View (tube, rainbow, N blue to C red):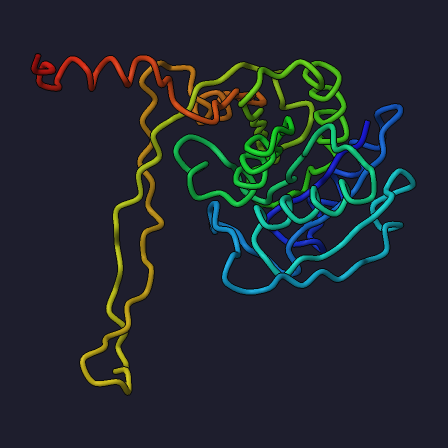
Length: 264
């Protein structure tokens, strides 16, 4: 199986190396790595279309014996997946799975809309390739937990994911003996007040004022009691299946019910 690995923390992050190490424990895999040349967290699903991308090939040895190719990309996580899929296809290599992470920070609830890690997986699914994302709460002190988590998830889900879905896996950074197991999870509503503070010094451009991001407080809403944030606090590894698009049929029905009737 040919697996493309990416992330949003950058190609030199410890997490992506640990993800490659975990995937290397699986039999009959070949790993290909393409990740941003520097950290691009919280960048969402932007892609580069009005300027060129630059690719710098790196030593694949850093990612273990099953790594065939590695490159740093000047673009976003989604760019990394797009260009790597193109390059591998040009070399006659069919990508069977994309894995992103291990992100240094959880990707839970509505935060997936900001996440470059999830964007890498979303781009893969758009391009017809199954994808899995792996994230940890900040620290990665216990990153070796993923040497258990990654092979377990791979063994159970690789080749079985429904079309147009992303598998999103999160774990708290705590000793393995404190992990209670795996649970299927929904998504929480993560709300950050839109807080920005004006900078004390004045900008040199007349009429322009500088503001600093100041929205680190977080409100979590779990409407079912089985959201990822709740299960993580309870000590579980959360596993969520995220559809590429919402339920189009129910959305169409809602709109149809409120539209005026077609005139005859």
